[in-house]
Length: 476
Ligand SMILES: [Ca+2]
Ligand SMILES: [Ca+2]
Image 1 (cartoon, protein in one colour):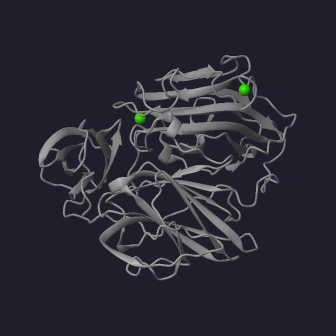
Image 2: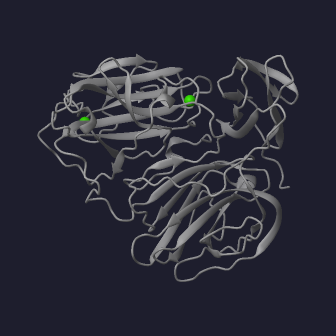
Image 3: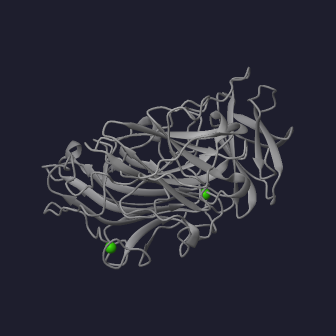
């Protein structure tokens, strides 16, 4: 996330979730995993909006509402940073629990302690199984390579049974997650909440938890209170690792609306990086779909969003044109278009200046229904495919500003060495364990600066591709 004041952070519609779409090299493991997350298949839990909270008589969780004002009934496990019970943001009553951050600072930037912040409660699952329900509220100024918010089911020794979620979300809204406990009927298990933070510039990550309880019966496969068209919130970033389109769509100044579709013309702009997201209208009727964009990327880092019907051709960017937002968001903008039942829209978010990128944007899509999945995870239609190198190491890098200072997130895969050398502009700046990620805090402010990175097996010239990250500068 770029450095934004807390009051400037985008707000999210109730019940929406956030899915970070930051480009990553597939297969790169996140470092510092508190447990071997990759050893256990992730079991998706259904997430339903705030209006649905059935109550039952199977509750075996003590003080799940945290209204004692402390961790009575719970066990604090990891104390980097120590979890707290707080009255700063409750889902119900006065109190909730909070992991991560650096209380009394909960979100934003602050004194970040590297490590895990976690607590759990052990309980015996009813013989009938039942459903675990809890509410959680997340904030972050970092990315999942470095920080995360997790919920697990473990056994009574802390061994992982199920990853309920592993995320780095900035949704900033109360979300209800339910977990079917039938697989653990009669067993003694723990519900564990954990936030991991890294060290460095203090980009905090936190999670509030409230109203944990066990309900009788299995979770409803289709929560009745779920609106059929829950807004979809996507958080993404545009980097030089993203695919490119040829030129960009001209910004007419007028946003398309359902009553007044726009038109498409092409402005010569070179190779433009983009993210594409695909949604299908399964509502059963024509919908007026609204796309809200929100970003702090302005000026050189302006972004622009265009909607296409059914498919997007990066070589012919007016083919299948449906609508566009008219102007870049500064910081917010909105456009809309009609989508018939069964039709698919491809939303293409692109940079405006070739190579400039955008560290973070939020896209909220309202009015398009996705059947069967309470929390759809849009996937880009094109996957960044960094150029393979003879060394076999694949590097991606993305720049962002943390409190105005240049910071670059590096991710790599393909090295079998125990440690790697990080090169910036041809000079080794660090030799680090080969854990697939490194954060370079350059500390420089200002614009029109480029940094070129590569990663090599330590002490060798078996190196990755080179990646150049650019901060600001005049349009190309
Ligand atoms: Ca409470
Ligand atoms: Ca962090």
